[in-house]
Image 1 (cartoon, rainbow, N blue to C red):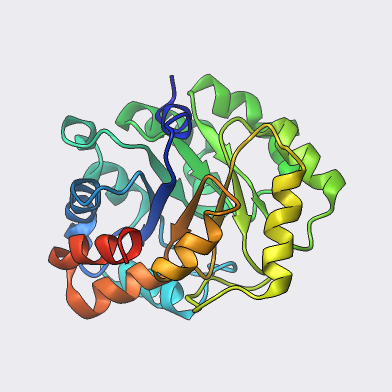
Image 2 (image 1 turned 45 degrees about the vertical axis):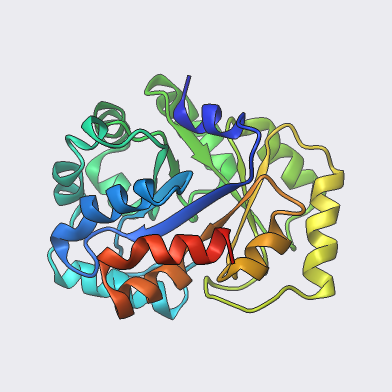
Length: 255
């Protein structure tokens, strides 16, 4: 069974962490992954740096720019991860934009992901309709789960279509904005979380964007299977280095 699906079946609240591959330094990628697993994180999103990351706020944009300057490419990432399954067992998801994958070749990209033990992809700028029509068969051939994003503005009809096409979890964006840490959720966001929970979708939801501390993690996971933290983690690594990861994870899960 795909590692994502196995993890989703566990009777616990899940914490997924996003980081930018090749940041702060190009060779930090594997160290960050290993340290995150050791710290008790449930899933990891590995950000593939891109020059125009439309869904990302300034923190992740800056880390992506720095990683590109460090010399990160798709090929470098695959080389860094070639032996990752010798030491890491939790689900690994590559989050990136469609252009670099298209340039690499979609089938070649999926085949490489499968070979090195990647479990899924998150591609914010690949519409579900296009995926369903042109690429779903390729992803399924290589055992990859494609994770789609929904926002407060996504219609119920489209959410149900995304649910029907999905085979893992739905990435529930907490607000209609770019990524970035915040310190709490308003009534509008809480109502949105409840509305989606009441739709009884077949795929569990994991909430991302704006999760930055124990309070926001706890609030988000009242209404979903888990939560994703990106910008707050990238800021922490920027300020404290890759050897300080355990303390960050404990601050989220234990307060």
